[in-house]
Image (cartoon, rainbow, N blue to C red; front, side):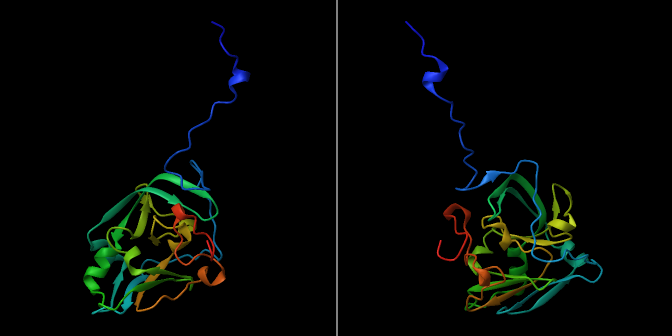
Length: 203
């Protein structure tokens, strides 16, 4: 029996990594730096993290106090709206669930607004920050989080596009309404689910 030639069969298709949402590529070892603001140099001796708004008790933690809370890790993939994904990442810090447990969201709290020391903001339905979905992260691969990637501390919401993982976070404010943040006011999608390709308003 005659064997068909390679040219007749055509190219062999490489199977797409199922961890990649539609429209994304694997950045491999790269971690692109994308920011709309000047990279600040934060002093951990004066940095604080505050949870306020519709909570039973507004609270602020210093750097040392945050590190005394029960630690938590995320291991998985992150996805940027600019189409790169980084697979198999590992971040450490504290779960947002822990901060909310200590502050007690009011029953009518439905949304949250994250604020960075730079003034950058981004918004969430509250249930996208709870149930083990979000962290305040200060390590990456076991090392201090690099400054250009939000170090010494950033929000981490890996199931949404990475503009939602606000760098240099300092505050979470709980609200009874949605309040679009910086990029959401400038045409980006209000939620940003990478698996639904919610990149821009109207997607």
